[in-house]
Image 1: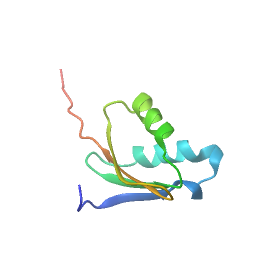
Image 2: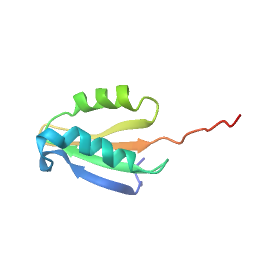
Image 3: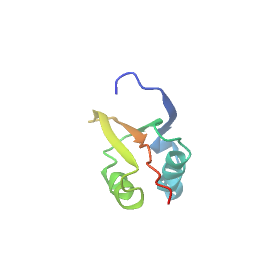
Image 4: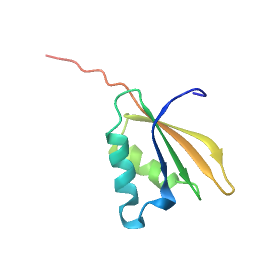
Amino acid sequence: MNDVQMKQTLHAPDIEPKIRHRSIMKAFDELNSGEFMELTNDHDPKPLYYVFLIEREGQFTWEYREQGPDLWRIVIRKNYFNITLF
């Protein structure tokens, strides 16, 4: 995952706190299958990871690229979906 093109790059502290998680989820939802976004933050966004687990189960991969102490950098990939038609 070293040479991936980021479709979105977000720095969480730049987003108003009351809409932060919603804005990040919206950016993720706008990705096409197989695309990546980068999220940076001034602390570990582990609570957001749990939101992804609950609200987007099986739809993403989450990889830490940098883990503090001043900056956390995460690459989030939107997984491909297998669609079965009946």
